[in-house]
Image (tube, rainbow, N blue to C red; front, side, top):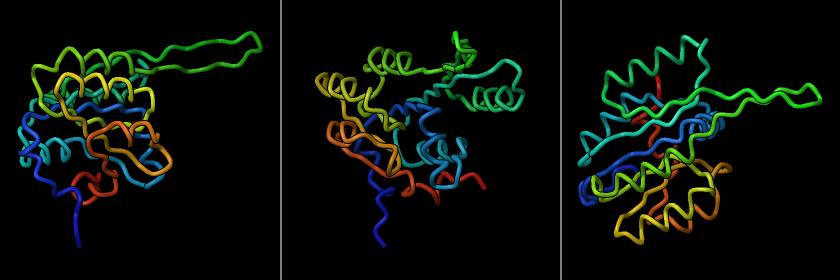
Length: 175
């Protein structure tokens, strides 16, 4: 069986991985699995010229499980971009939790261009299509990874290569 996850990553030059965590978690619920971020890091270290992995996440102060995950990732060398979830109270009494890190991811992908040749974007958010085109215009490649039903056609069309998360289940699945 052909395994798309076994591409020759070393031909991609230096790789920087950008993880839109909220998008990834939501996408993987559909597949019924979660990423073991340590396994993912090990996969890229073994198979590519990994420059760094950036982890974009919104958290609630009182969530100790999230704090433990972030502490472990920091020890493993992940570059964490974390902000607190914003609580918005509407006039009708409804409460909305907002914690999007898309702008931070976009700024980093642009600012860090000298450090990588290929950006690996774990997200299917169409908002990133102009970002992909921008970094490509500056000589970079972009590989996007997401799931069916959670990937925009703009990301598929604009990225240099698109890959499905399920191709990586044997490598990254949390067991």
